[in-house]
Image 1 (cartoon, helix red, strand yellow):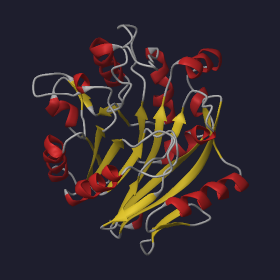
Image 2 (tube, one colour):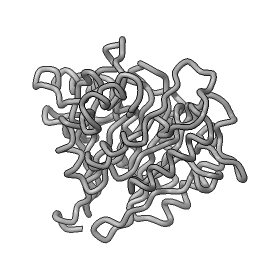
Image 3 (tube, one colour):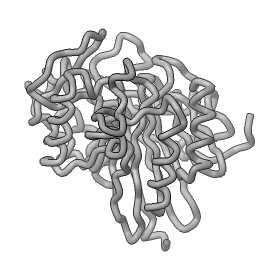
Image 4 (tube, helix red, strand yellow):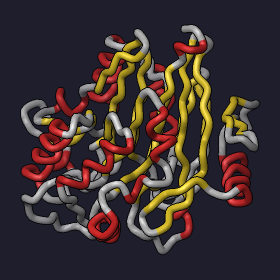
Length: 318
């Protein structure tokens, strides 16, 4: 690929379009959550986020601590902000049951937003979203290691979500996606909430995914920023934090980052843009806070170095 043929992929973390965020959308319109980040999101060839809300008017809430359900019209904000694909493999997509998940997939199809991580059976849930960009087939797969119970798992003849609680069938589907594409990105929902470091299983799993041919991994769920690691030159972002989210009492939940991955004939490179969440709306941080987040990333990453400009490069392993 020539320089002009490089492929830009933008990635952000968890998005909830209900509760306090839903109230802000009701007050200020569907574009409110993305007003300060849409310029970044739109400039990419492919823009990805984790949709942590079923989109439906049906269903009953599951018996769990937090349940969300967004109005179908709220998806217009994602369309206007330039989102191409969302991950549904997470611990909220079935908050209102299977009818609401089915509605979510239908509303995304109508809005022309791709989705991964959910489906009417296992094969569909693990299936990649593939888009041809500048002559290259780019595949996105979405998988969760944080689900309330096994009822949420997609099975051979049962709808649900793609899960990472065992390496199979996950790795077989990953290898199939890799075989069908030129670039493969895994979107992982994993790790523990409000932690700075990934769980040992996540570091092991990331390497197995890359050994299976994945070119980059971007994670979320922890409501906190985690470090970056490289393996076989592939970047692993363990958690980019929240993005459009209800107000968090924990300050870690109000700090996040947007990631720009660039794929060219020379391989991949990436950079981070630290953001601050206020009233459900992310915005790029000022210089002082941006530097504070970059300093933190340098402390908690594994063999990765982040420059003042947010450029992420491989360094000697710690």
